[in-house]
Amino acid sequence: MQRRAFLLVLLPFVLAAGCARMPTGVTPLKAKSGSELRAQILKSTADVDLFRLRGPFEVETQKDRGLDLSGTERIAVDWYVAAPAEKAPLVILLHGHENSKADHSYQGLHLATWGIHTLIVDLPNQGPWVDNGRTLGRIVAAMRRRPDLVDKRIDLDRIILAGHSFGGAAVAVALAEGTPAVGGILLDPAAPGKEFPRFLRRVGRPVMLIGADEHYSPVANRGDFFHHIPKGIAEISISQAHHDDAQFALDEPEDPESTSTEEHQVTFVSALTAAALSLGYTGNLDYAWRSFSDGLARGKFSNALRK
Image 1 (cartoon, rainbow, N blue to C red):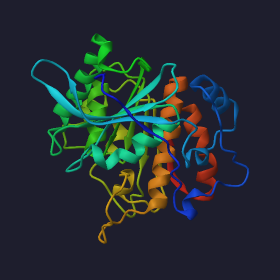
Image 2: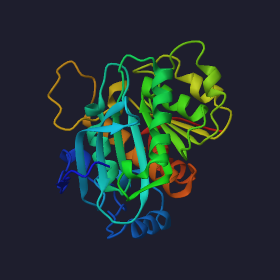
Image 3: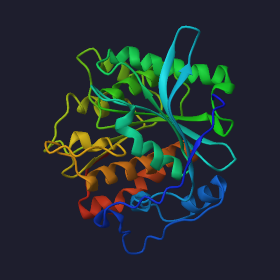
Image 4: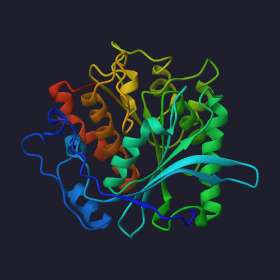
């Protein structure tokens, strides 16, 4: 990682009162190290509501940096690095159609407070998404070939790929083509065309699909992901959420035409955090799946599918 000074972010951020309340019986966790937090999380009852508020760690950020993949290819990125000194997993997060890395800034920051380093990348935001997926693969390959590109606290054996909308399709392409990631997280993904299932049939890593409510906000060919990925995929939907709720920008200006609500954005980020911790800590989705059970019973989530 470029040796520029980090901006140290102390996160006193508390969401609007309705979002910030922890459910009865859920106790916020405190930890001084990633290993201490991991032990607490895996020992406690799995509950996605635990991750609605920030985690225990400070975050170091580098925004609008360049990641050099070669002498001619440089990717614009934002880094969110958890403060503890020990190695921890990394989420590489890609935006969707006509969006940018800024649209996921809150998610990157939030993940890092829970000890999951996050790299949000800017790639061509009108596709082609297959090429973007291959670029994700080159990013991972470059990091593993040149560990000096990243902070020494990043565990390059525990990389998780995540993407929103067509960015989720790019993640599937990267996994299908053998990118050495422990798994993928798809935020209300869209499939770009009839030829795309051929990639999905080759995905061999665990995949968590966190969807919007298709009754309110249907997305192109979302059903293809669960149908064509042969195994290791789990899917839930967030009741009454819209497609754009799967994004969450810091300091986003008010948009009177937006269908997004902070409550649903917080639910997306808490589900994303549960999935990232599950994959990063255990290499599978069992912990995340258990964490959704109470929300499913209360109607917060729906459309629970797993194979």
